[in-house]
Length: 167
Image 1 (tube, helix red, strand yellow):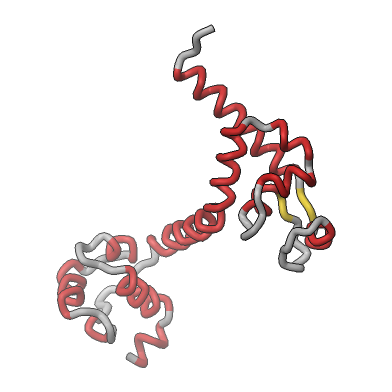
Image 2: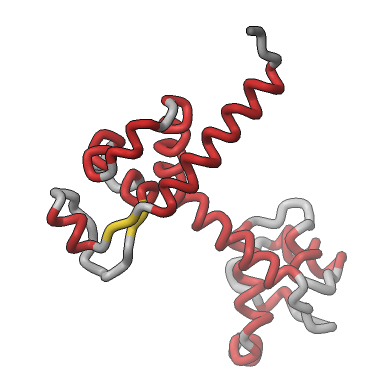
């Protein structure tokens, strides 16, 4: 029987969703993991299959030995779980950065803010900020040439009035 790419994609997506659900349900405490030969931090936090696969030295056969039901997963679902495990820490940090930016994006910059007081801000960027006079941190972030370091500096001074008075 012939299948279309759409049907193949749907089948793969379904297999992956089922694998994620199963992997999320299976977990161990640090003591249980240690008893099975897995080295994890003794922080009391339960770790599921994806958490364990994200640890250095833990591979799919290791977790499948603990939970034989994982052996039934299709190879493409196993591979995707392993990939997601490797990148999950990065994705969590990136999401935290995005959340922090969204929180700070609407932070108002006081009228008449003196960008010249920001030691470490380039003259060029200081001039651009003085010319544009952004009303919020989000507007400042969209100024051509704005760097993450410069934005962090503006954020620190906007959030902390004592810095503005001391500067």
